[in-house]
Length: 420
Ligand SMILES: Cc1cc2nc3c(=O)[nH]c(=O)nc-3n(C[C@H](O)[C@H](O)[C@H](O)COP(=O)(O)OP(=O)(O)OC[C@H]3O[C@@H](n4cnc5c(N)ncnc54)[C@H](O)[C@@H]3O)c2cc1C
Image 1: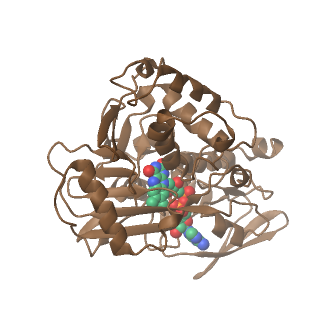
Image 2: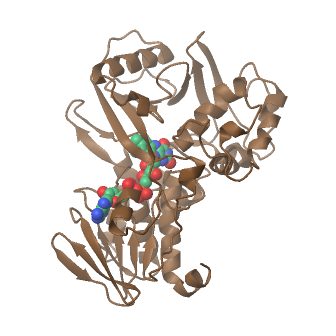
């Protein structure tokens, strides 16, 4: 059995490891941290005395790579959500509330229904969004004129800000188009919200590790790759803190580490080098019965609120502006948004703020142009990660796809290099 090496056990590395195992390789997966999952992880938080995720992760029913990955590792039931595309929103200025409810089929008749669309909008406001679907090359969303109005403020800005983790004005219109093509343009059946049943680790990580271990995969946590050695046009060795691993001529390596680590290990790589933060606030407070599981917030600091059985969690995208803000003041401000959104009068409960400075690459046209494909000039070195050229912004769907793509190139290297 041929050995394959995967470096990094985030979702792209786990996805590559799963795909390579399915293809008959014996996988050796090395991860620097003491836990797998990377930016999609769970941990016990002493301040809250509960297990929380580093950040809320929302995926959609149309995320096919996510669905395939979970089916393979036997974890499809660990992602939950309704069989309809239904999103609650509140505009805190004026306490206006509505549900966005795209119909399931691809013909978007919901935009003609006042009970399903954004309040205060007309059919034309939606039709003019079509110009977002075929943007000029290299354009920013902000370059595409005449998008303003309530649909923009109350639907497209929250949707694109969270999907791109970048201010829509500066974000890549091509990446926005890709998001819309794979979601709203496919109809409501592709837009049903999905969240984890318990936590990220129990859905995306632990079942994958168990699946790999059960099929002969070797998983080494706490094993940081320090150097890659090349010779004769091939990758020949991987240098870890505990010694070198010789890579025999036919053994493939999938490098599934963050962009900045990949660039350190392989200095000639061009990779995205600007990132955006995500801030999450977690509050130990059991939501009232019947509370909306997810609420989009307009006019507050909070952008999306997730009501889990034992806590509320708040997400703020492109949150670099909040980096130096006092944590206690931020928690109080965000709890005030939660209390207004869910009509609560309770004082600030136990809280935690989790800030991820380099949560995703900045989804600008310039950064998108720096994303490499899966192949390198060394035939046995492939790249994976949400920052590689997946055609999507940095998302779970993109990360899982990238791992699968890298594995597919491993299996057909002739095709790969002929195509470069
Ligand atoms: C707070 C937050 C919220 C998010 N919300 C969403 C969401 O709602 N929906 C969505 O789809 N996406 C979301 N994302 C994005 C999603 O989490 C990422 O796209 C995905 O997890 C990236 O996976 P990855 O494998 O590409 O990278 P990573 O998760 O960064 O994995 C890389 C791995 O490589 C390891 N590593 C680094 N250096 C070395 C080395 N030298 N040797 C060995 N291993 C190494 C790291 O420890 C890490 O485990 C969110 C991200 C964050 C941070």
